[in-house]
Length: 223
Image: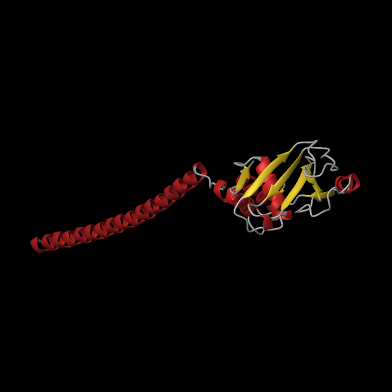
C-alpha cells in the first residue's frame, strides 16, 4: 500500500513537472514572437517618421530657380534678342558709355578727321572756328565770304592737310572744297570762289571705331 502511494506521488510529480516544462516553452515562444513583432513595428514606425520628415522638409523648402532663370535671361553671343534688344543694341550701348565723358563736338571733330582727314598719323588735331562773312581767301579782294559758320580741322604740318565743313546737326556735314594752297592767279575772280561755295559736298559722318575716336580726341587742340 505504501509503495502504491509512493508510486502515485512520483507519477503525479513527473506529470506536474512535464506540464511545467510545456508551459515554460510556450511562454518563451510567445515572448520571442512578441519581441519580433515589436521590432518590426518599431522599424516600420521609424521609416514612416523619416518619410514624413523628408516630405515636410521638401514642402517647406521649395527649390529656388531664380538664379538659374537669371542666368538663362542673360545675353550671350549666340542669342539674337533679349528683352527686345539684339546683340548689336547691347554693343552700341556699351560703345556709347565709352564716349560719355567726351563732348559731342569733340567726338564730331575726331570722327570727321578719321573719315576725311588726308593724313591719319598726326601729332595734333587743330580745330579752328571761322565765322560767317569771313573771306574764303583773305589775300584776294575778289574772294567771296562764307555764308555760314564753318569749322576747319588741320594737322600740325602742312602735309597733314585740312578739312573745312559746316555741320547740319543731323549726322551730315557740308564739306567745302577749299584747296590746300591758293595756288591761283590773284585776283582769281568772284566766280572762282562762288563755285566753291555752291558746290559743297554733303557727307554722312560715320561713327568710326570708338577707341580710335578717343585716341584722336586726346590730340585735339582748339584755336
